[in-house]
Length: 109
Image (tube, rainbow, N blue to C red; front, side, top):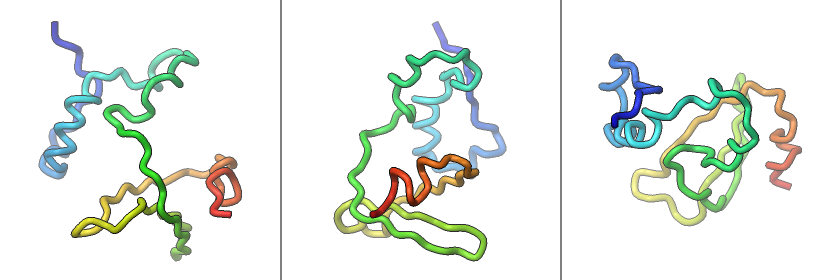
């Protein structure tokens, strides 16, 4: 029995994406019903936060940067970076989520 495709990658994006990401998407995300389309159920908290995700990596250091129009907080894993540097994930937060302000639970202090 085949599963219904829920979250396809738009064909115009395929040539722009890394084949490794496409494989991950097809294995873990393609057939998932987007959680925001489901009725609320507290049991969602018991599911992995990121489909196909790995356990969190220990943070070796945190650095804050002031950019011309934004602030940036960078989390670096422990150890020396691999040849070519660490992979990067950029997450743009819209704000208004007080617990994750630099003075909140993600505080460096």
